[in-house]
Length: 372
View 1: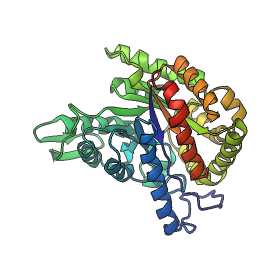
View 2 (view 1 turned 45 degrees about the vertical axis):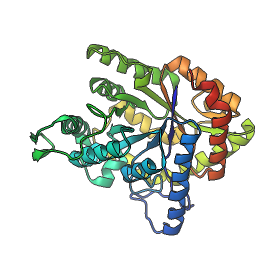
View 3 (view 1 turned 135 degrees about the vertical axis):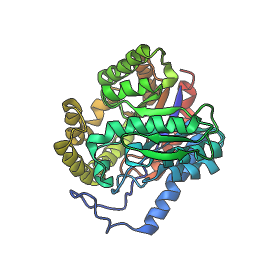
């Protein structure tokens, strides 16, 4: 079993409950943000020494929810301070971006790191389309075309032209090409059956970043496996990544109390403006089918789901090292994934508590689960 340390890099020095989008930035303090960036990067680097095989970056915009508007900048900083861990971009939101630039920057990161890039090519969540003024109805089409273009840019040894529906380039020849041959592993989301099937068609790693329902997750994984079979290949555990929130402490009560406070901050402070933007997209576009739209409308309820229930269901890893070991073993047995993504900085959880959690993962949890 491999483990990925996933970080949102939230801006936590605010107490305003925003309902507007974009979220007004008058509360932003650059000095505080400078200190947060330093602490967050230190934590991500420290995770490597605690047994984590991947370090996960991500992309969000116009909100204190995450300060990683360009994850490749953070990835570049991590490359210089790590030796072994893969730099997992989870990932660039390619329908919003220039796919040529994505191909070039990812190739740079892969070469700079000596082949440690996991190349997330994601569609993103609804509010990102409001931020970048990209029609949400075009999201799938843009994603699929961009992925095919990026693959060709990575593997072509001669200049080529591209005349697609969404992207046109007269001549393309990227420098550098990726370090990994023929290309880095691609990671894609499995938030819906359509997404899981698309990941299978592209032979990408299936990324289920936040498992909230075991049966629903099994359904996505099965859709991925079935589609892969239709495409002539069989996914192994290394092709599936599942994720969970995690906090390890000396007692369940201590971990539970801290996580409850962090989740409340996430729901009330960090998530408010995003929900407003998501509703605008869901009401006025065909971004998602009805089932997935309902999931996003229920997002606040998911953020408020009782911790005790999630711990009991093994969908949140909160408690003592023994409890977390038990949950990881259960999830591995039920889902069969080969990579577990753990998100520890939830809301405004203290950075010191995250460091202690990482230490307990290193000393007690990782030795018991690394060979699953």
